[in-house]
Length: 251
Image (tube, rainbow, N blue to C red; front, top):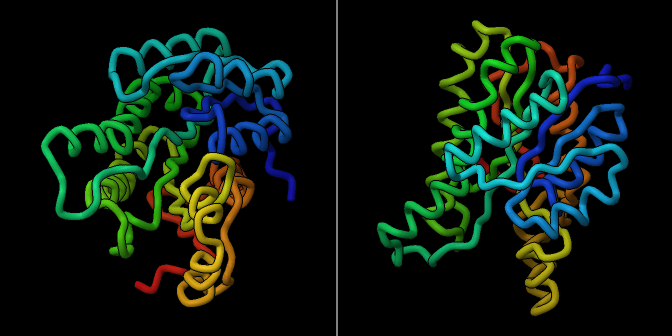
């Protein structure tokens, strides 16, 4: 399928490794001029080294002022912005029942405010280009996943409500927004790489019992769907949460 992305411009937040980097690489391969972003300057430089002509802008998207700076610099250097991928997030938190005010704030900042900050900062530029937004979420926002932190699940559920709710006002500006809700994704440094190293048998049993395809996903699986949703080919899709979990979610 021709995704009609050649010559488009894209900013991918949280893209120094894992899912975000895979999305940036796939957009780049489709002909996009890509800006990658992360907080760690060294990690960002390593990622940029593998993406010829990519622009690297370090910044903390959980901070609204920093998010505005990143978006302003990206638009200034690109000339315009067609695609925003919001990938900042992380599922590590306290076990259910041990939440604190500070942990609620930290997890929501990472998994929700980082997205709203980016979108609010990019909205004018995306309206000018009639662009597209893709948010990377989690199946934890769709149903209760055993053992998943409540803070993380609540933040992702809030993200889903935001995507559905903001779709109409964004649509009035010609901007589309969708979210991808991955299940268990394996990459270096992920929670699943650690679990496999600790107890591969238990992971295989979990997959066999809970996942229809009985396997873990890859960052490329997420990238393929995210890039499709960012492309003009999916021009009638907006305000939706796209589950990508190998058949785990039951609801």
